Image (cartoon, rainbow over all chains, first blue to last red; front, side):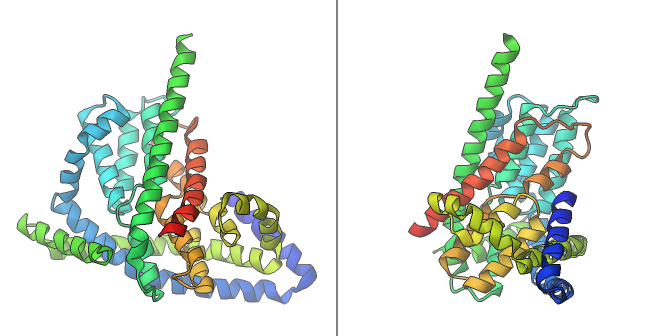
Amino acid sequence: MTAIFLVMFVASCIWLLFQNPDAILSTSLDAINSSFQLALTLAGIYIFWMAIAEIATRSGLIDKIAKMLKKLIRFLFGKQKDEVNSLIATNIAANMIGASGAATPAAIAAIEKMAEPEQTKASTPMVMLFILAATSLQILPTTIIGIMQANGSENPARIILPTLIVSLVSTVVGVILVKLFSRGKHRKETK
Amino acid sequence: MAMYVVPVFIIFVFVYASYKGTDTYNAFIKGAKDAIALIWDILPYIVAILVAVKLFEASGLLKIICDFVAPVFRFIGVPTELTHFVFLKPFSGAGSIALYNDIIAQYGVDSYISRVASIIAGSSDTVFYIATIYFSKTKIKKLGTAIPIALFCTFFSAVLASWVCRIF
């Protein structure tokens, strides 16, 4: 991120120096101003949904969803320790309802427990967990719906179904790719 | 139908929790507290990326790059207005939310471009951020195929979003 930030910042400033040097400061200050406005909008959305997610976690709703996912986890991750299984389930279930606050710590713990002390290369189940999170199989895109609502959308719920389709397909593609590459690796190793 | 999904879900969570005897009030407070801490944490990141992106835009460099890749995007059906959004998405969650906000302000929240952006924003996560955080408690440095697969999926979902949005 540092490299990207540096390149964007320096290149833009040099470019602006030759066209409109005043714009460097005024554009930056404007951007900071809108950052605070955005943070205020986001605060409303995050506070509401993370509060709901906390209630869902404490009431055991997340655990319940996790139990329903048991077979799927077996298929995706193969045989794992019970402890790891339930952490993976929590991660998937929490990601599904958009509670990334609960999802991230569970994933960190799951990967920590799967890793050998001196392991430096990610194993296939770890890559699988990472891909599931990256392709984000979310049932309710709560943040986006909130922002659309805040901006006066006539029907923010309209994006729920297409978002679900797109994230489902991209997740399936990701899972297939992980499985394919891990099989290729096995073949190489047995040769 | 779809407009009832969110409210019904919220009511269900509350009813289920009180049936299970959860202290909903204190759980709500705890969640709100975490959210405020989270916003406070990400605000500097939002500031940094918005300054960089706005400068990039004001300098005209963004337009040069976007014009350069526009033919590719047009060919696969992704709106060229979303080029920088698609590129930024894997690097910065806060930044892409900021950019998303910009896009819906500029093109109108219910326009085709905004809807595609909404789906892209909701259907993939910040690849490089997750890669850092998820493996942070181990010594694992080599992620093998993980990053290329994740980036491919992110890009693929942008293409798919552009197609799906023509139907819905």
